[in-house]
Length: 115
Figure 1 (tube, rainbow, N blue to C red):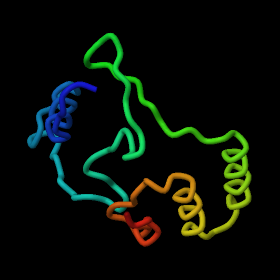
Figure 2 (cartoon, rainbow, N blue to C red):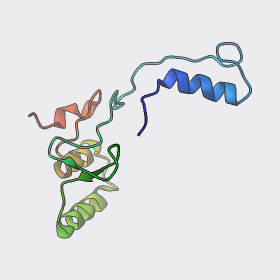
Figure 3 (cartoon, rainbow, N blue to C red):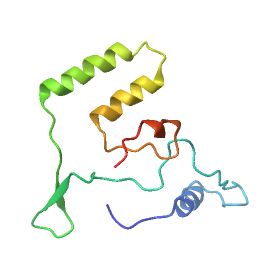
Figure 4 (tube, rainbow, N blue to C red):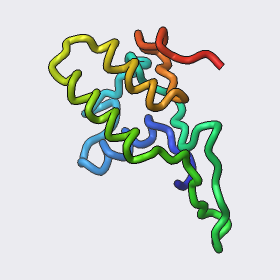
């Protein structure tokens, strides 16, 4: 994935590449986290692992498998909820399918399973 880069540096570079100057032509505004936004993105959950390959920087993800029938059952349930205005019910169903997902900085944190 390469080395980490600061979003501010990326914004400045994009402004320069567009022919402008940061803080002169285009202001960079820091707004803080929005609901549901995460500071760090997890690529694998705690129950998953990686396998090495011929290259030390390339790994294969060994992820949790789901039965086809189980996934289809969830798809049907999600389809049933498409016209339901209850977001909480939809997110609860998503968290049932992927219980490891945590809703940091979101009103859906109340649905997170506690470890």
